[in-house]
Amino acid sequence: MTERPTLLWLRRDLRLRDHPALVAAVRLGAPVVPVFVDDEAAMALGAAARWRLGQGVARFADTLARLGSRLVLRRGAAGTILRALADEVGAGAVYWSRSYDPRWQARDTALKAVLRVAGIEARSFAGALLFEPWDLATGTGGAYRVYTPYWNAARARAVAPALDAPRLLTAPSVWPRSDELTDLGHSGAMRRGAFVVSHHARVGEVAALARLETFLQERIGRYKAARDFPAEAATSGLSENLTYGEISPRVIWHAGWRAWHEGAAGAEQFLKELVWREFAWHLLHHFPALPEANWRGDWDRFPWRGDNPDVEAWRRGMTGEPFVDAAMRALYVTGTLHNRARMVAASYLTKHLLSDWRLGLQWFAETLIDWDPAANAMGWQWVAGCGPDAAPYFRVFNPARQAERFDPDGAYRRRFVAEGQQDPPQSARDFFAAVPRSWGLHPAQSYPAPRIALEAGRARALLAYGARES
Image (cartoon, rainbow, N blue to C red; front, side, top):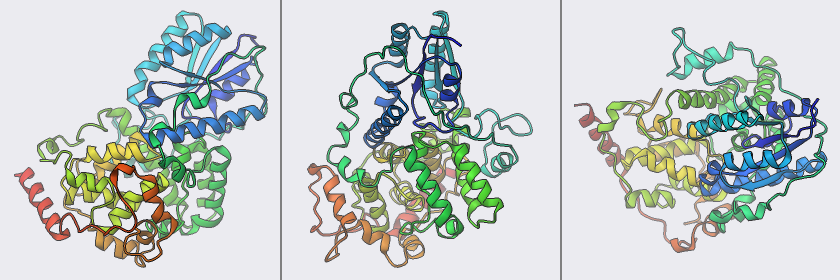
């Protein structure tokens, strides 16, 4: 046992249950000083993700207070802040949950070296994923490039049990100074959209565990059959909470695994979706350029259109294709996007509008509260046709046919597209309350004409793909 406090650097791990870094800090027996640094990584987030991170931090501060602890908030470069704070409290150790984002890994490694030179123990812990990205390998020891073999390897690997939440955190004799959360400015870029999205966000560990329980009790049996219908409440919604570590993937895995072996019809598919997220991080670890560069090098010759008026209409949900526009407006109203609607919207941008997938990735980074750099990069490249395990280039989602199949009664489109409805629902009107006033949009406006006829757009895309291959 040591009396020198341990700094617990919190990042995307805003929970008590199954938190290896937190459990290790508590087991040292010394005072624990939880700290959140509004650092380079936090400030690089898009508007919606940064707002949602602030909500999660505030909620977790309340959770810690109920354990007799506090959350110390500081703003600045993580390495500088943590080194100074360690000196300030006389810390003997700094613990944190490992990041797999290649943008920040070198910084974390350098911080460990600096702290160790100063005689401070510095350790990072797993916890954000079921498996470390380097732990699953092919028979030849390389990285997986195709999902199905990765899934087969993952399902055969034992997943460690989730750790219990600590019941008490020993407080230091004197708490260090803390900034106010409001001073960190997490809500600034969201502007008036924050109020609208706040009605849909489910913030914190308690909300995440309740979401899981609701899914297991009410939805998992029909998950496989209904998950592609965006108007139905068939999915778990847990991507939001996973993004900020308000629930661990191990807690979800074990709950889903039990349901699978108890015969729940949709449990296997649910676990596959969880492992799809793992696969994305596996790829990003082994191929750090995934968010910026075409996975398939021959796609570098493809004549993607840069930013253009069609892309701006897509961003604003004004393409004239109701299913696409409903999806893009849902981003502004809820901060999230159903997976089927996401694929259709992404296909329309990259194929019917022939616009660069990175433009879409950047917009989702700005507008999604569940922004995940690995899953979204892989998803965009998959839809565009240039990525790992990609959809064939000739698979061009037709938004009208997709709507007929997955929104047959138009409920999803009515939920978010107000134009043409005599009495549109609040969700459709909320879009106009959330978007920038400078766009000049209002519910009584005329619905726009399509940017391009669907068959003409498909033919143009196939012609461009054919030219790339010749």
